[in-house]
Image (cartoon, rainbow over the protein chains, first blue to last red):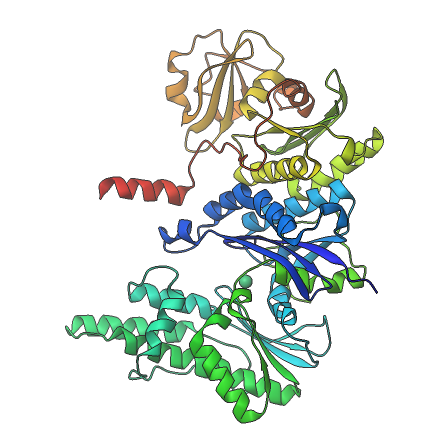
Length: 335
Length: 217
Ligand SMILES: [Zn+2]
C-alpha cells in the first residue's frame, strides 16, 4: 500500500498549525505559529483574540507546511483538521480553511479529535502496542484513556473540575509568575522541596478520575495565610510541594490503570507531558514496575498539526470522510 | 471571468456566482443554522448547477465586515483559503456598502448594523460613495446631523426612535445580497491574500481593556 500524504490543520486553541504527514508516521513538515506572545498581556488565552490571530495566520502556515514538505496541494491525498474539542471560534478557522482546500481540489476531508491527535503524536516517534493506556494532561484536559486496539478509545478517568494544566496556571498566578505559568512552576520545583505536604486527592478507591480544585485551594490558602502572618514563602518549595501532589496522583493512577487493564505501554500526551517533574515521576515508576513508557519529544507535546495528521490515518483508511457540512465541535467526545 | 461572491457577515448567508457581466446564480438564507455548516454545501451545489469547477474560478469577492465576528471569520477564512489555494484574486467589499447597494437607491443612504447598547456599525453612502468613515458609534449621536431626506437600511427595527425622522428602506431590499456583492467587486483591485483580515471595526473586548489599562499606567 502506498503511504497517503495528509495535509493537517490544527487551530483549537492558541497555536495556528499545519503539517504534512506521510502514512500517519512520517513528518514532512510541521509548522506551528504560536500566539503566546499576544496572550501574555492578558495572562491567559482570550478566545476572541485567538480567533482573530488564526485568521491572520492560517494561509501562511498552510503555505509554509506545503513548501517545507516540498509537496504540492495536488499531491496531497486528504485534508485533515481538528474538529474539536477546543474554542469554537478558533476551531472554526481551521475547519473553514480545511473545507475550502478539500472543495477546491476535490480531496477527502477528515475530521480529527484533538485528543486523538495528542495520543497519536507518540506514533510519530515509536510504534504503538495495544492494548495500552494513555495519560492525557494539558491546559484543557486530564484524562486516562484505555485503547484496546488501534483507533479505539475508552475514557476510563477524567478530571471532575480543573485540568492539571489549569491548576498549574492558577497556582502560577498566585505566585505572580508570568503567563504561561506551568513551565515556570516546573522550573522552580526542580530546586525546591516538598515542605508543605499538600493533600493528594484520590477520590473513590476504584476511581480513575481526578480532581485538582481542592489542591489548588490549599495552595492559595497557604500563600494567603503566610501573607497574613507576615511570613515569607519560598516559591521553590511551594512549587515543589504542589507539583509533588499533582505528579503523585497522576503517576499512581496511570500505573494502576496499566496494571489493571493489562496495558503493554503507558503513553503520555498533552502539553503537561513536557513537564519535567511528571516525566521524571513516570520514568521512575515505569522502571520500577517494568512498564514501557512512551512520551513524545518536547516539540510534539504542545498543540501541533503533525499529530492531527498522524491520527487522521484512521478515518482515512476506514474511509470515514467528513462532508463539507462539517462544523466545529467544541465539546466533541472521543469515540 | 468566473466570480464567487460570499457574504456571511450578518445572520443571513448569501452566495452568488457571476461572469462579471451578470449574476448567474444567487442564493440567500436566513436560518437558525450556522453559516459554518451551510456555506460550503451551498457553494458546491451552486457551482454544480452552473457547471463550474473550482479551478475555473478567477475571483472571490467577500463582504469583509463589519458584522458578526464568527460569521466574518467563516467567510474571510473560506474566501482567503480558496483564493490562496486556487491562485486567484481576492476582493473585499464593505458589508455596509453592500447593504447600501442592495437597497438599490441612489442618493444618500445609511446602512446600520445593530451592535447593542444603543450602538451600531454605520456607513453613510452617497450615490455609492462612502462619505466620511464607517464606524462603531451611538446611533443617537450619529443621526443628529443627518439630513432628513437620508434613507436608512439594515437593522432599522432596533433603532425606531432614533430613526423616526428618516425614511426606512422597504424590508424586501434590506438584506445584503451576494449578487450585488459580485457586481460591486467585479472590477475592483484585489488585495494581498495572505494578510487579508475581516474588518471587525471594534477591538476584542479584552484588547480594548488592556489598551485602556496601559493608558492609565
Ligand atoms: Zn492540546
